[in-house]
Image (cartoon, rainbow, N blue to C red; front, side):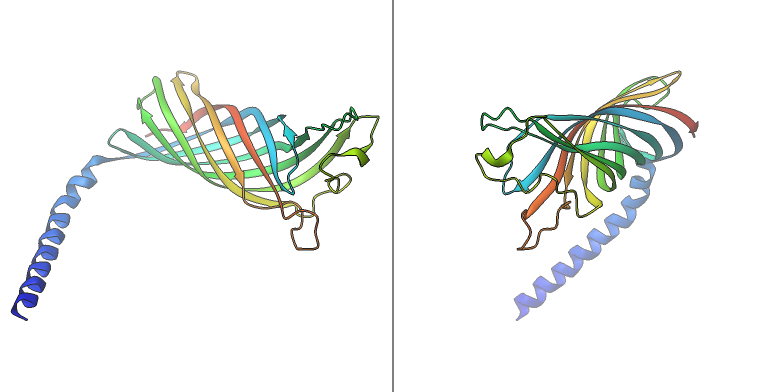
Length: 241
């Protein structure tokens, strides 16, 4: 019993000592942070390399389509050599898929799906902090979207009856769900110049939502968009302090 009381006393002492160290160190950690109030806005454009996760599976080739939008960024602080902030965007992006048809019919098919998308991203920068130079940037966060339009593009000679996998329910079947959501992660290089910021970035968007209904009576249990995105963003400073 005495041994247990001794351990408890040592534990309390350790906790008090650790708590005291945290209180003493807090000002030092606070001093490591340099506050920023930097606002920048601009435009972006790039290319999506799209695919759709279908179940049952549909073979696909690379589906390339454009993306463009506007960006607003707020840098709030610098911690050691890391720049921290948030970035919000409103983009128009074309997603969809292009089928790899291997039944000797000569058919071609792809679906274009135009979304308005709003990513809200944590923004981190590593490297040069100033009006000139370069730094590596990372963006990560959620994204929501709304389907505005979609279009089927198929060859003139069209005979889906010969599909090797027998999956043809997608033809003529437009999306059931307009709302989409997922996760965005990306990184790139930011070049800071006298006329603004140029950011070359690669991103990956992973869709968490299906655009077709996915109950047991529906033809697809999974139908989610994913994209590898290459984009160039140009920002100008509105306020920098």
